[in-house]
Length: 129
Picture 1: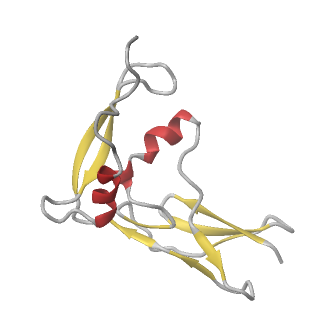
Picture 2 (picture 1 turned 90 degrees about the horizontal axis):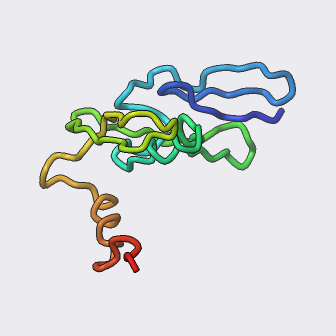
């Protein structure tokens, strides 16, 4: 039986491709402790909304015999929340205030440091010419 995995709210669901039957793979997901998604602090949500997508598909891997699925769980409990302004929403409307999470000062994960280190100085965008 072929099965597709998707994310609903904070949990993972499976759907049979043969008969469209669905069942929950997880049931204990929470807003800040969810399955199959990366951290909100990456701000991917802004780009995804511009494409009309609610979120990326869950990151999962099937076992070689296709009887088990491996997924990760993102824990952002206790991470302080800030806000970002989406100045040009995809619908062309007024600016929108979006929640964003930031790690506590002095406890930034390595992924956050690598993202900033990857920017080259002097490349702030196109030059007027």
